[in-house]
Image (cartoon, rainbow, N blue to C red; front, side, top):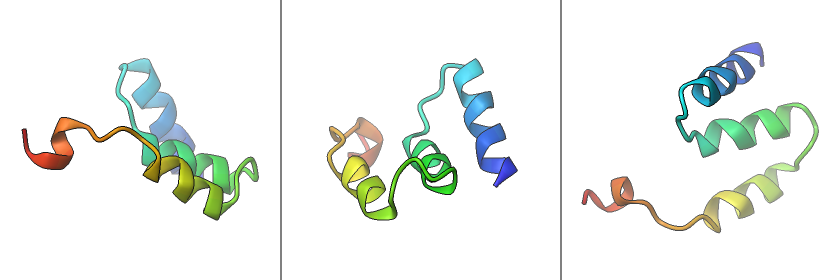
Length: 53
């Protein structure tokens, strides 16, 4: 998935947090299981965009 890795690099260059893309890259590269990726994302602290604040 070259596009996911490229998107992650672009986000890092611009200081944008993209947690879903980051775990997708980890899964594709074999550094994380899909189950672990889901656990990581679900454990994140809720952000204002989640609740429309």
